[in-house]
Image 1 (cartoon, rainbow, N blue to C red):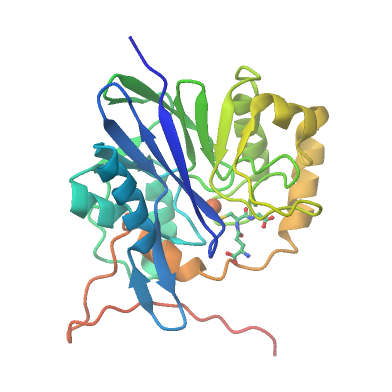
Image 2: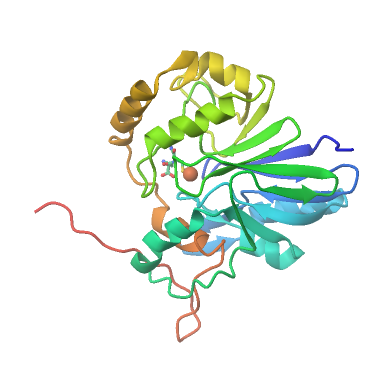
Length: 288
Ligand SMILES: N[C@@H](CCC(=O)N[C@@H](CS)C(=O)NCC(=O)O)C(=O)O
Ligand SMILES: [Fe+2]
């Protein structure tokens, strides 16, 4: 018999990201969803404080972390998946669309060391994985990026960057391989689930008139009140709105550092001949 998962959220204020520890209370088997690797671009420092907090809670509760699940190749923060795999022996899973992201960004970022070993499992739509007595179903939800997947366990769905809180809307679709019409279709699949389904988000940026962070909502709340997609917004309206908004957004501050670490499953680039590790930023001229 399947039990309900226990879910603990960890919010990283410096990147507005949410990570989750999801556990089967009956066996102690656990998964970490979207862990953050601390990174300060100005000083080049990388740290494990955020991931350490998740591991400490897992330890306190006697949980065994079996999986690190990525909802997508994050473009705004570094992933601590590799670090958690190294410390716990957990396997890393992500949507199979990761190969498209690797194909586009690998050459640009000189990532000639990609060999398939950074991810233990590439999920297709409809795949399932076992977590103790829990069964997690994978739903492909592309649009924000091609590798986006959502993880469905019990009445909880971890939606990554598809939907944000109803008062903030939805994720941008202007990254390579992103597609607003595809995001619309992915969101419709999510919104076809029962209204009481709990949705756990990957980011929160607050919203005008809201002074606290939030990351849990429901299908019903999204259907009724999402500012981009609620009240039965049509695909044309959504795509037009998304394109107009995306044209105003600047690249995430950590775009290149994040992508080059995250296409490696959170592994830092290989060392230079002198042993140091460096990140690349491909340069483009703008203006005259
Ligand atoms: N200002 C943030 C922006 C991060 C960002 O672009 N977030 C993506 C998700 S990875 C998004 O969909 N943002 C929606 C929006 O800002 O409207 C940064 O520099 O990191
Ligand atoms: Fe994202």
